Amino acid sequence: MMLPTLASSYLAWHYSIGLVDCLRLLANFLWFIYHFFSVPEVVRTLFSPWRRLGESYRVGFHPERVLEAFIVNTLMRLVGFVIRLIWLMVAIVAIIVTFILGLLVMLVFLTAPAVIIASFAIGFYLLFLV
Image (cartoon, rainbow, N blue to C red; front, side, top):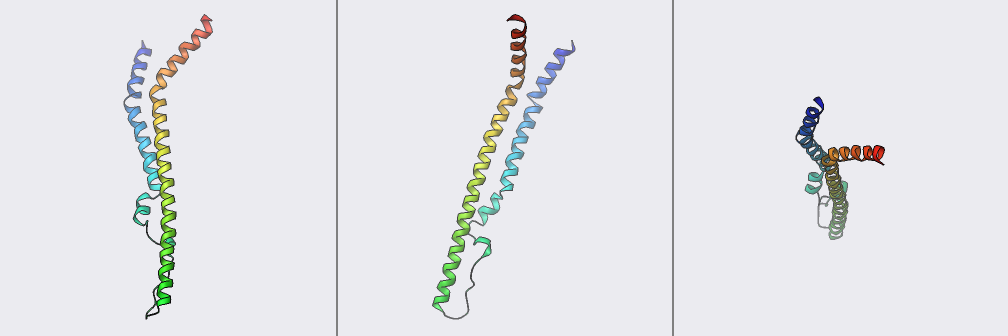
């Protein structure tokens, strides 16, 4: 008598609260990776110089020093852009991989009760009828 009630209670939990908790877990993993890679900060500072390196412009008119400072500052911004762009690509790949793995876990979670019941049925069949 108690087994059908336990099974129906488990299935009700599994496909309601358990499923929602599994979705929340996936959302938490995605939130963590998004903030671990500091995506908003990296996007906001995409064109900033790398590690705030650069030359300051000197007072007075010295064309060669102004050009030198301009070239160094431009190169540091280019280096910063390339490194941050690579970092963003790594973040996007990590988010996509996490999402795909989360969907696979959800698929396993959704099919787990049926797989367990089928495994027992096949096991009893092979044990007693073959």
